[in-house]
Length: 517
Image (cartoon, one colour):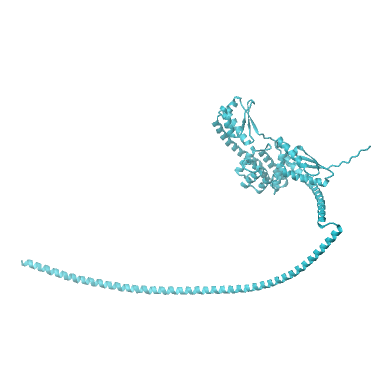
C-alpha cells in the first residue's frame, strides 16, 4: 500500500516538473521568436529606408533629365518661332516690294489705256471720214456708171466665176499633162515589170459540184426510204442535193464553197463505205468537218510559208485558210489574196519599201471575207476589226481599211495593196459576173455620162471598162471637156461599184462642110 502511494506521489511530482519545464521551454521559444520578429522588422525598415533613398535619387535624376530635355525643346521652339518670324518679315518685305511694283505697273497700264483711248477715238474719227468719202465715191461711181453697187457686184462676180472656171480647167489640163509625162512611163514600167514577174493560173470557181456514182442504184440508196437519207443529208450539211435523170451523176449545189466541199467529201465517203442511213450520215459529216478544218489550218500555214510571212496568230492563220473556200465574182479569195501579196511584194521591192510587210498587207487585205457572212458589216469593216483584234501592224490595218477607197491611204504600202487588188481583179478571166448585173452596170454608166449638160451622147464600151462621151462643140470648149471628164470620174467613183477601172474619154469634134457646085 505504501509502495503504491509512493509511486503515485512520484508520478504526480513528475507531471508537475514536466509541466513547469514545458512552460519554461515555451517561454524561451516565444522570447526567441519575438527577438527574430523584431530583427526582421528592423531589417525591413532598413530595406524600406534604403529603397526610399534609391527611389528619391532616381526621381531626382529623372526630374533633372526632364528639366534638361524641356529646356532644350523650349530653346528649339523659340529658335523655330524666331526663324518663322524672320521668314514672315522677309515675305512681308517682298510683298511690299511686289505691291509697289504692281502699283507702278497699274499706273503704266492706266497711262497706256488712256493713250489707246485717245488713239482709238482718233482712228474712229478717221474711219468715219473714210466711210463718208467712200460713200461719196460710190455714189459718184453709181451716177457715172448708171449701175447700183449690188448689180455691179453681181456682174463682177459672174465674170470672175466664168473666167476662173476656164482658167482652173486649163490649169488642171496642163498639170495632168505634165504629171502624165513624168509618171505614166514609170508607172507602166513598174506595174508591167511586177506583173511579168508574177503570173498565176486563172481558175473560175462555180457554185455546184458534180459527183460520179458507180451505178444508178446508188441514187436510190442516197435518197433512202421515203427520202429520209436525202432529207437528213441536206439538213445536216446545209446544201442542196440534186438527183435527176443524168445517169450515174448527182449534183451538190450551194453558194458556200466550204459547205459544198464538206458535203462533197461526206457523200464520197458514204459511197465508198456503202452504209448510208441518217445516223451514219451524221457520223461521217462530223468526222469530215474535223478533217476539213485541219485542212484549213494546213492551207493557211502553206500560204504564209510560201509568202515568207512568219509570226501570225494561229486563229488568224485559220481565217486565211478559210479564204480558200470563199469567192468574189467567181474568183477564189485565197488565190486572189496570194496574188495581191506577191504583186505588192514585187512593187515594194522596186520602190524600196518593206517587202515582207507589203506581202502581209496584201494577204490580209480581204481577210474580212472569211467571216463577213457571220457578222454584220462589209468585209472591209470586218477585216479591220480582225486585224485590230490580233494586233496587226498599223500599216496592215490601213491597207485593209483603204483598199476599196472607203478611207484615204496613209502609207505607200496601202496604195500598193489597192493597186495590186485592182490588177488582180481586173485581169481577163479573173472574175465573172451575171448578165443582169453586167447590163445594169452598163446602163448606169451611160446614164451618168448623159446626165452632164452639153453631152450629146455617151457610149459604154469594152464591157463597161470605158465610156466615150460625145459633147456638143458649140456649147462645150476644150477646157470644159477636161472639166466634164474629171467631174464624171468623181461621180462614177461615188455612185458605182465595179471591178477594175473605167476609162473616161470626152470627144469634142467640129466639122466644117461646104458643097461645091
